[in-house]
Length: 565
Image (tube, rainbow, N blue to C red; front, side, top):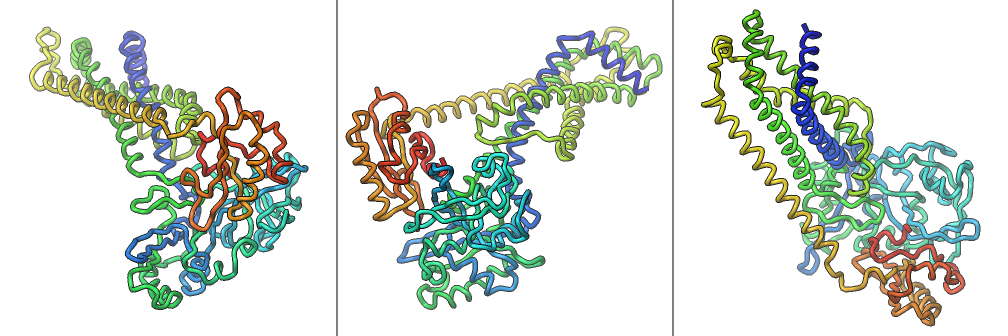
């Protein structure tokens, strides 16, 4: 019986090629869009969920009311993490996550890098598997460094990085310090908030921050903090006990409710609501849950349009299929058998459309990743298989509902006498489908045009400076040393005819955060000077003594990424 139904379905597809091609193309495009959007939405909603202990990891943040002004600090005081661990037995582990701008010497060349200081608990709390390690606790020694696979290839190629020494400058007084590579971590997945290439022990923070700031200052905020709660701990009840800790460490400096330590679940950070974005350059920009809802709704609308298109075409062919129904009923076919046949045809068509959609999604995925600046992958896993099977079942049943439920109910006598007419409730249903289909299509087209206008506005709106004629050099030092470097840079370049202006500041273009002031030198060059290759060939290392020309970046790139270029 099933073989017979399959043969009939394939014959119908072959006999009505245009009809089949329209249905297959419409459903295939809809499935392609749903797959691409689904991959993005899934990534957004599964951020940081791959950690085995993700449900027990929280990020402390602080609400502060000072002199009538309210502040929400995602970056926290240095003593907070250690104080929470020491005060509450419910806190199993705690770690800082602090970004620093550094330089690394490699074969006589000085490279600018962004590194992150963490406590030994970091690798125990989070799942960043070590593909190579010199021991069970690679961050216990102050002179150790953990690198990712990508960073290891960058510095050591195919050689074994374990035991190799990197000359890293992390303070303002010492040129470089030797750090031994003790472990190599697997490259982090895309749905991960932590974006690092180097991990240094947090004990090195004493080289760049005073002991008072690290252990006693609750007003100098800089690192992100994370805590791992013991199994069975109620985060809300634990948070309710924090005011006593605050009173102990701060005394009467704040009234009750003016300095409040809160906990935010790790899995809720990316799609946060009501909290500002962290200014740590080592975390990915937080998303917005509304965007995920909107995109998911758009995908559903496109799928509904494809299903309606399938049904309206089926209604258009109802007269020819009615004779088939009449003959089959005269030959003894039961209605349930006809329902199974029509639904089987719809499911088969949907399955072929899913195959087409998957193939198209694989072809378009690299371009889609480039468009949204991510690294999505379509992997063969249980979730993907179940999702595609669910699409086949739901879309097939929905798209084939009219042929299965309506056509199978035609009376053979009326059909064979030629008295069948599609009118009344059926005609109204058909017109309603067309109205809904065109309504959704107009809504999506208008929305696309509005979004395109907004994007054009963002791309073409004047920023107040000539983007194509400005570059930025990030100097990982502020204060007097940063000013000295900027002055040396000015002296070295002011005689160049290509340079119009040179300026320096600590926080240009909203870069930097509290407790971290780095100098960024902005260079404006003439339009006829062409590219900035003349700067790379200029003898910058001699002008700056140690600073590399490779740190030059166009001003069109986010300034916060300057130190990692």
